[in-house]
Image 1: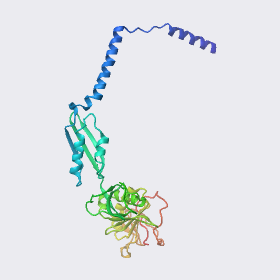
Image 2: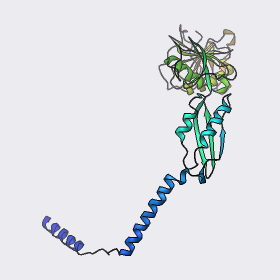
Image 3: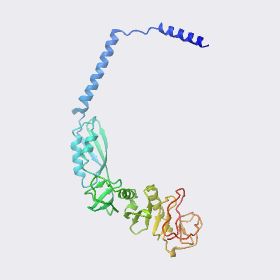
Image 4: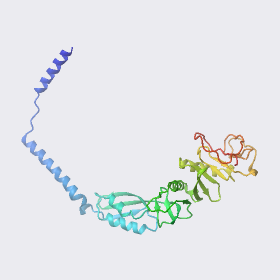
Length: 314
């Protein structure tokens, strides 16, 4: 069997050897060589002359996205740098070096428009908090970027940072985490945040102006915790709570409700009610069995629950 297969393969090989490919004429060879040379010339012309020539030079630069007091200086620096470029050869690294002296600039979006226009959109860092350090107070972004000389609009929350700030970012891990929590706050709640602190027993705690404390615990699932906080704060049944435990964002707990808010359990489907033990319940939630109040909010043990459930008053 193997011998027969070898014989067939040998015959096919002999047949292939007998096939002759058509020869390329000398005239065709010359044409192919001329075409290859022309392609090389065109590529070299584009690379070393055309893409940096006056034919595609940047003549019109538009800069958008700037809102701070540094806007005129940043805009002038970007326009001056861009006009030394072409729309076919925009040097992003050079533009980023120009604005490196302005910490407010987070990122640049470049849109060249052939033949002579370049559009630059500046994405700014927005101050999320005021870092209080040994050397004074300075605005910081949500990622910890230090924004010297940048005053935040309205009242910003404060965070404590150990030591002094030497670089472009916060080095204190606790301060970095607090800045992230402040930066992730929805706009409506961010205006109410007075301080983001760290406590030994509860972890990260957000102090609101005219509102309860928000216990975050750690920096995991920060957005989910802010969403849960907004939901509980909007529930009339949680009015008067002194704290909202968000360590389990799927089951936030509002505690410290005053005794005078106690009303009979409302039927499912209503807008909210208070259980007989004074525990605030969201709409449609099942009543909670009264339990002895803990000395401190119980640490989170399970993140699989759904719906806001309020804990008894401490």
